[in-house]
Image (cartoon, rainbow, N blue to C red; front, side, top):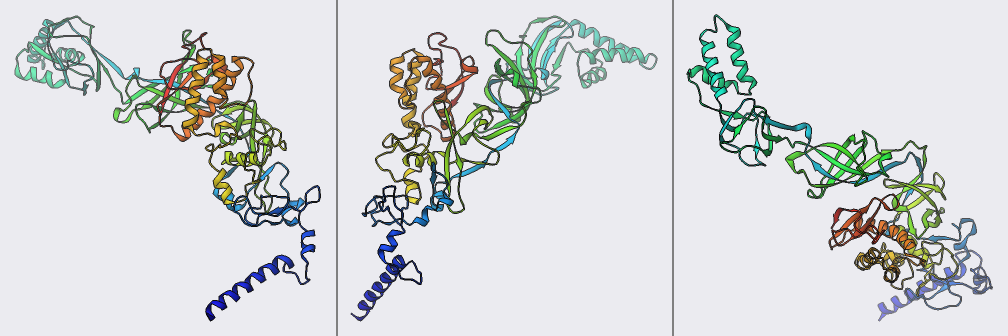
Length: 565
């Protein structure tokens, strides 16, 4: 019992000390409860504002319990709202713990020369500089084929065929006759040997004829190069003429990659530009090279220009005819411009939003700002207006910050008029200042229980099926059906299907980025139309082309660039 009493008294003592600290603030002068409350935060009407010690973003006009954790609310201290340290009215504030939990990262707004990246479809092709045609240097008849099917690999000096030829027999007799008098007439002897050498017979075969003194009625024909047999133009017992082709042999150790550049992007490309490309049949492997040739003529049917690189082909994994996709990086001649990472930008219709770091010494905070985008330069965007050099923008966790701004009814991706309350959901907890809030609202584009935020925050498993229905509706020119499915992605109303197609282009770009970053379980195809707005991509679940940008006008315009797994 004594021990129990001691514990009770100890608890009461600690509780009293805590209350004393709250009421008297640790100062030497006593402070009444009324004096303490008079120094607390009040709203515009003079009412005391109560908050939660664990969740300081909670602001209530009367005492009660915290709607998040259930703790009793206490008067908010004016010291927590020091105007000199305020990050601004549109800023969403984070505690340092919540900042770490949300994994928010920022990048510097930099000045630099844009590097334009052009994504091109292509195919692996045989390097024509490494193709050899094996031709007959004399007439004759094919008696035996030692290599009789295409695709076979042959080495230099390997037997290809056995040839009977009267001219070969005559050439052997000349060799044997001149060999008898080579001391007296060495030039004639060397001439007879050189004749057989020019017919690409090995010296070993010529020496064998000379040593035996016998004329061989059939001679073996040897490969002059190593490589794969891509063509055979002879059969057994065929009569061949001088100059006729027998075999075609291709060396695949170095191959060509032929890309198709649409006319709208040709002006950005130069010989020597760096290229990184992947081959659909060699997953996980990234190859690189430099542009070695740009076709000077435009193909009028496809409206493309061939752009070629030469690449090493280790282990011959790349086969001629395989599809490839390349990204060509080209430096522009423009003066230095403001650049930010692509991941910093949020799109909604015609608005582009970034979150700028406006943190003070004690308060991590970020404020939304509308910017005007220029051209895309690889993984960066050119900024025409809205930012200054040296500012920092959120590049990781952007959607988490935006979700907090929406719940706080501040300027955000889907809230151009902060303070109206239009974007507040059923649970308005103000700023994100705690670990619990970060966990509840921190899913990057994954949670949207009350549809208060941008609908692109849904899971891909929800978005993709609805997107595919929208794509089918646009491809079939069904404006009414398309309006039903675009509500998942846009809050705008559209007067005609062409306005909707312009919005569909932005939706497709954002969704392609998400699929590439997050992956998707189903089979999808990335498809490309070179004609719409200088080149536009979309996603389809069918490999065949059904163009959503032109519908029945050019239903099959475009091509499948890659399969997205």
